[in-house]
Amino acid sequence: QVQLVESGGGLVQPGGSLRLSCAASGSIFSINAMGWERQAPGKQRELVATITSGGSTNYADSVKGRFTISRDNAKNTVYLQMNSLKPEDTAVYYCNVVVLTSTGLKYKYWGQGTQVTVSS
Image (tube, rainbow, N blue to C red):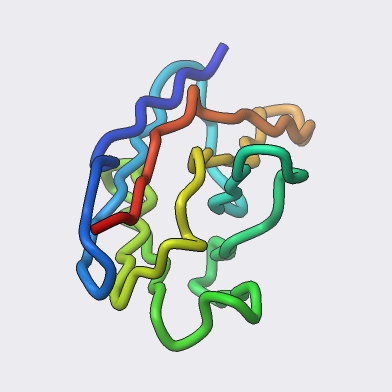
């Protein structure tokens, strides 16, 4: 079993910044892709950003140029640096990781979510 612990959410004014962290622990042979999703009230969950084991990144158009995803493989941790935040970024943010087992199987896990509120 794998546990994901998120931190870093909160209330911030428009134009401000936040940094989310997500640490994975448990039965991990290795981690493949890591990423962040978000869900705003009344809306479907959407992809925010992903990062592969090799460091390749992908972003939703709505956050390109403002958000940066990174990872620390030694700590099994993924980060999301969010700058120039807008009210429409308000959502619950969920991290996810794809874990590889020693037998080559892949499993995807999600964190419990952390609230980000952008408001003046």
